[in-house]
Image (tube, one colour):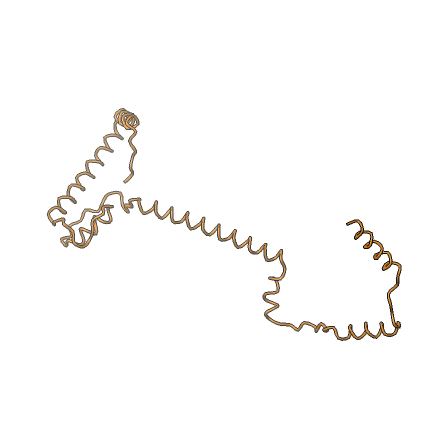
Length: 181
């Protein structure tokens, strides 16, 4: 192996000391000029709408920053939609009463009474209901009686602060949640 390395070094030294063989300087110049003249000439880039609109895609940092911005906007959109859906779900569980007292109705048609039940918060299907008109009338009367009893109880509690204090204490002891109607 040392013999091969020795031969290699000798050949390299000879090559370094020898100068390149050149025929004439004019031939070299002519060859260089010919090669340069045959190089493809860079035509001036003409204006194109495609390069104007999408030229930014060739710039790396612009492309990466726009992708990052778009991902940020998508995340904000998804978060916003989830908040909206959560609020809609919460709102759908709430009971909405448009007046202080429920409307006491004397409508004789069955569908009107079912509509009243639906507005008041019950989940009675409108078609194919198993509730008779008599049961519906009894329910509406009981609801009206319950509302008047509740109003009377509130009046009594307002007149007697000791009674109000005692009721609030009992409610807090049993951890009841007050529901506003």
